[in-house]
Amino acid sequence: MSFFKKSLERVGIGGVKIDAQLQNNQYTKGDTVHGEFHIKGAGTDTDINQLVIDLCTVAWYEHEDKMHQKKVVVDSYSFEGSHVKSGERLTIPFAFELPYTVPHSTSRSPVWITTRADIELAIDPRDEDYLVIKEPETSRLFLNAVRNLGFRLREVEVEAGNYLTERFYQKVLPMDQIPKYVQEFEWAVPSEFRGHIDEIEAVLYATEYSLHVLLTKDQRLRGLDKFFKSEDAYYELEFTLDELNQPDVVERELWSILQK
Image (tube, rainbow, N blue to C red; front, side, top):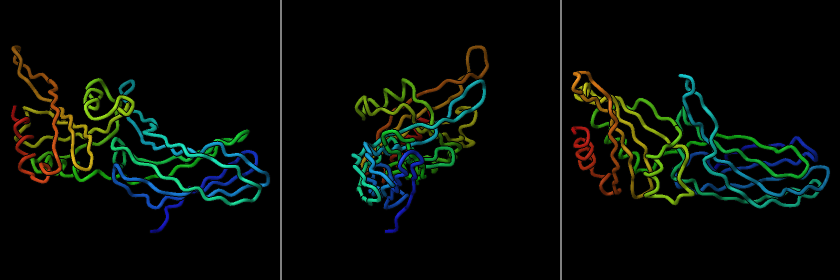
């Protein structure tokens, strides 16, 4: 398999070069990423205390009626460094597992890794390379079911979580693994639901064999004052891979919720 190569050169004292090579740049959530750090010593002996890979994405937030973006670290992976002699070449293998909470890659939710090294008395060397992260089969089957009902995927982006997403993730993850930022899917409604539903949104937690869904229905209600008002209704759904492989089962459950 060809290597997806990224180079990173230290610009501080000593000039150590670190080249992190990945076996691939395309992964599915939950995959194990394998690679190697290729280190070339400089003119003097150098101690690399630690090598760190940050898994990053972009989150969106609203401020003063405008949308802004910021870098978010999804997870970090630390690896033991080494003493590098002058001119020495070292190869250090590494591996880390992608969390199921990492967003899948879109133009508004890119995913990349930043490699950095802890070297005493030197500027922290780092570089970035983008990954293609795909949804597991469980997510893809659910997204197909929503599309089959006539809903058009309008937007996918990463946003700050809230108490609802925290409560949702508490059922499937330990507290220290609950993400502060979540990827949200948003659909425009087909004609038969217009006037009843403005849009639907979903946060997905997908593993290889199961899918948990936090579904938001932005519905329109007619009040006593005869004006339409919007109100969000929330539903938590759970599907096994076997259920997701039966599209009619998923579509019936979604349809029953949307008709309420």
